[in-house]
Image (cartoon, rainbow, N blue to C red):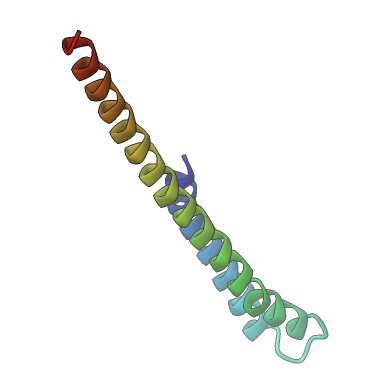
Length: 86
């Protein structure tokens, strides 16, 4: 889910940032132009960080699940060996 969110977030974020920057350029001379420019550049880093955190979370969850599965197999193997020794 985290991986999907990170992937799906890319396009809308890029579109919003591009739109703000484009609108800022088209409104040169208007008082709102600077604010739109700051909106486009100001949100780029936090939203990029959010995407990276989602990607990192997905990677960590996959690693955790793989380690958990490995531990379960190791424990099952140890129990089966202990039962066979009786």
